[in-house]
Length: 75
Ligand SMILES: Cc1cc2nc3c(=O)[nH]c(=O)nc-3n(C[C@H](O)[C@H](O)[C@H](O)COP(=O)(O)OP(=O)(O)OC[C@H]3O[C@@H](n4cnc5c(N)ncnc54)[C@H](O)[C@@H]3O)c2cc1C
Image 1 (cartoon, rainbow, N blue to C red):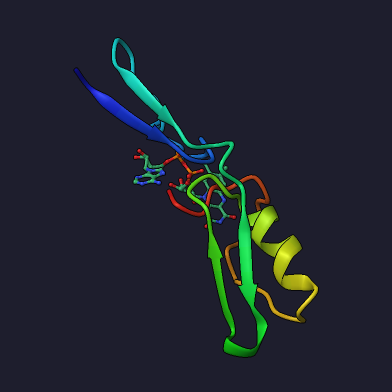
Image 2: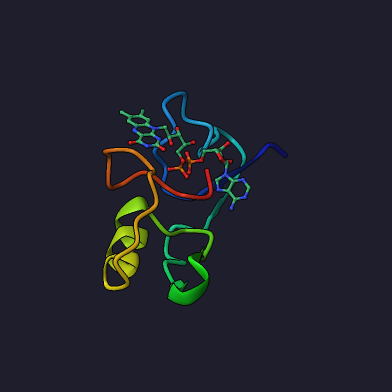
């Protein structure tokens, strides 16, 4: 059976989904943990660029992921 993993579902060609197969949808796993003193951020498999920006902003940090907030980080 064909399998696709869905994170943000933002991939242009649509590889986050599949016809007649199984989609492993991780898009609700949105947790983000920031270690400000180590300049490190860890995101769960479904977090988006917006989730990461929101969490790092409080520490005066940012990750240059681009301009589209709904982009999934894992994909
Ligand atoms: C209009 C548009 C604007 C864009 N703008 C930006 C931008 O501003 N910044 C940027 O960085 N990129 C941008 N991109 C590119 C985008 O980052 C990539 O398409 C990326 O793959 C999207 O990730 P996703 O998780 O949302 O996609 P998905 O469709 O969910 O996944 C993409 C691929 O990664 C695989 N995958 C997803 N999650 C996992 C996982 N946990 N483990 C293993 N494999 C996984 C999927 O199976 C699929 O093959 C843009 C694309 C488009 C179409």
